[in-house]
Length: 376
Image (tube, rainbow, N blue to C red):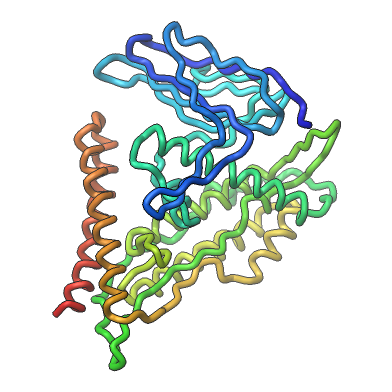
C-alpha cells in the first residue's frame, strides 16, 4: 500500500464574496457514457470550498492526484484564476504566481491555460469534453492523470536504466530558438465522387514521440519512484504535439472517423507537419549533449512517420452523414466561442478568439461546399 502523506495547498483570495474554489483528490479515473459518447472523470467526489476559504489539507496516498481550481476578484472582474493538476509526492514544494499558489508534498503536473489543445487531444483519443466549465476541467484533469499513469507504466517497462549523462549543452542553438515552419493551408475544392460513386476523404493519423523519451534517470527508494527529465527535450516534445494539433485543426476536424478533411490540401498539410517534427528533432540532436535522451530520440526519429494523411473512400450517403455531423459540430464550437468573445474583457484575448472563430468559419465553409457538391 502506498505511503500516506499530508498535503497542504494555500491559494490567493482577493474577495471572499467573489471567489470560487473547489478541488478533487483522486487515485484513479473512471469512464462514463452518455448519448453514445465516452467521458473520463476523476474517481472521487468534487469538494467545494466556502468562506473563509481555508487551505486544502488532507492525508493522501503518495502517487495520487489533486485537481484544484480557484477564481477570485470582484463581482465584475477576475483578478486571479488558476486550474491545475498536482501529484502527491512527499517532499515536493510548489510556489506559483508570486506565492498565489503554495503547496507542500505536491508536484505540479500541468496548469491549464487555454483548454482548446487539451480538448483536441482528448477527442483524438476517443473521449469527449463536457460543455459545462467545471465538468470540462474535470475531464481534462482525468485525462492528464490517465496519461501520467500510462506513461509511468511505459517508463517502467520500456526504459532501460540510463547511463550517467552530462548537463545539456549551453550552445546558443537552444531549443527555445528552434522555429517550426508555419503551415498555411489554402484548401482546394473537395473532389467529386469517383466513377464508382465513392467520395474521397482524408484522415489524419498521429504517432507522436512520447514526452517520456526525455527521461534521464529513474530511482526507487523505499517504494518511492523518482524520475528526472531533460527539461529542454521534454519541452520540445510537448510543444511539438501541441503545435501540431493547433496547425492541423485549421483544415482538419475531429469526427467519428477521426481527424478528417475533404480537401486534397490535407495531404500537403500532413507532410509539412511531419517535416516540422523531423526537422525539430534533428536540430535538437545537434545541440544536446545528453547521451541517454539523444539515443532514444535518434531511435524514434528513424521511423520518420509521425503525422500522415490517409485517403479513404466512402459511399455518398455515408459521406453526407459524416459531413453533416462535422458541420453541426463546428457550428456548436462557433456558438461557444462567440459567447466567449462577448465575455472577453481584454483586447488581446478578443483578438485571439476572433482569429480562432475565423478559422472555424473557413473550415465550416470548406465542409459545407463539399456537402453541396454531393447534393447537387
